[in-house]
Image 1 (cartoon, rainbow, N blue to C red):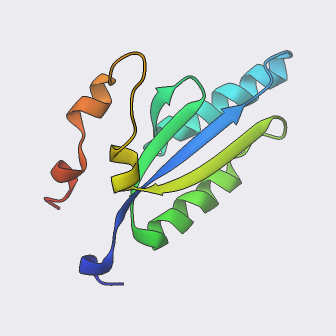
Image 2 (image 1 turned 180 degrees about the vertical axis):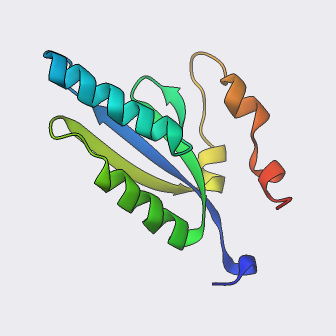
Length: 110
């Protein structure tokens, strides 16, 4: 796929993991650390997002995500276009510092 036909998208990961036992807490911590290390930013508690460049990148990151899933709990992944993501409304609260400093127009300079 050529660079001109690639589209920036966002991968959103939503999860609800148990933290009852020590093993559960460890699995939660390992999964959260994986997300941060793989370039995801926390939008809210248990909601993480990262920008990807095209369908190939989506597939790659979904495979990485699948390889690092905890054994218990609920994890969901959704891909949205950058235009849809930019249209998200904040009803209460403000943008995070990360959201304010990283915008798609900055990434187009690659």
